[in-house]
Length: 112
Length: 111
Image 1 (cartoon, rainbow over the protein chains, first blue to last red):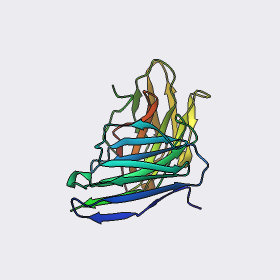
Image 2: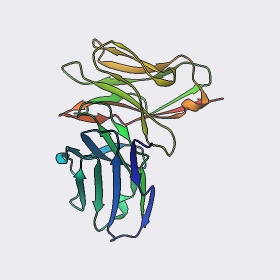
Image 3: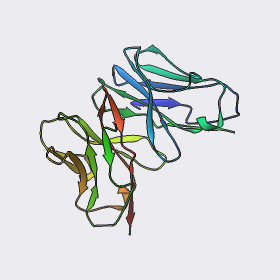
């Protein structure tokens, strides 16, 4: 069973479109995260939720909106996609904030 | 201020030789520190973690790391590199209540 899953794995879309990425974890963890990895492999945290409550919200354009319907799911919706949004987006989860994180396989977003 | 600094962006070793990937941390206390590995086109996998129980931490795939408070370092080592070790490695430490990733070290293993 996959611990942290993301869908879709690949997403190719045009500028200006709106898209969503879904994440689910079956580990029973309380905390979930979204990271963006750019072409230079740098990883930047975007958001973190603890028990459905937003606890970390980095300097991210408000076109990005996370939603956590329950503590096992954390989705990422992106409005008005731009070329600079092209990256790999990783979802992760952990038992608590300072604990080790378990990562999903990533979603490669390409904006043309 | 960055919580962790990975001192080398690229490291190249020959198969069978030792691996050393360097990470320094900045903290006034003993933090929780982690090393993750990312193979090409894959997600990140935890290699090992330090949580103050023991200064020498053993991880998966023969990797280990030693927490040295006097040097504020948490370097990752492996006695003998294997071709399958070629990957991106990230050191992770806390900053302002969240985990912060270093910039990564690309490990190349030559046959």
